[in-house]
Image 1 (cartoon, rainbow, N blue to C red):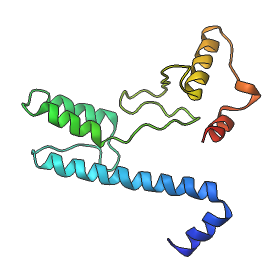
Image 2 (image 1 turned 180 degrees about the vertical axis):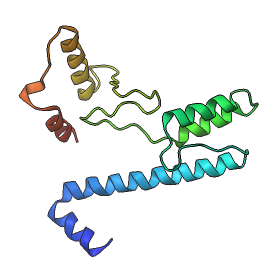
Image 3 (image 1 turned 60 degrees about the horizontal axis):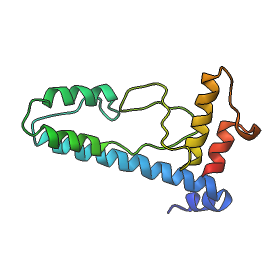
Image 4 (image 1 turned 120 degrees about the horizontal axis):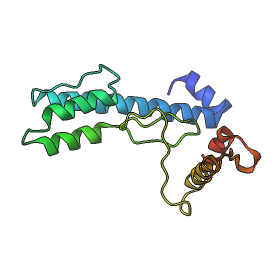
Length: 145
């Protein structure tokens, strides 16, 4: 590790680790995209979008290959090339569905973020705004880590 990075890690260890994880995640995503492009080239295919393909780029490619005998393989490889979703306090939408806003939850019993989402939706349906424990959503996001 670079000396500057090590000094930063000692001064603000939580933030430095988060920045390191984000950097590693971005490098991994770039490697996955490069591997996908190499795989597709072997089948005389390409994915539009340059370094940041959109959900529409993936959808267009899926439509182009839908009738191919190797469709199931291509679809699986495309799905596995995508980064795993991350829970965040800010709403960044859903890449695969191309939604600007998106909320996902399973069972309110199993996960605290799911419980908060469930309560927020109930509040919206009741015409109210749910604020958990008087804290901001951003503060809760920091607490949950």
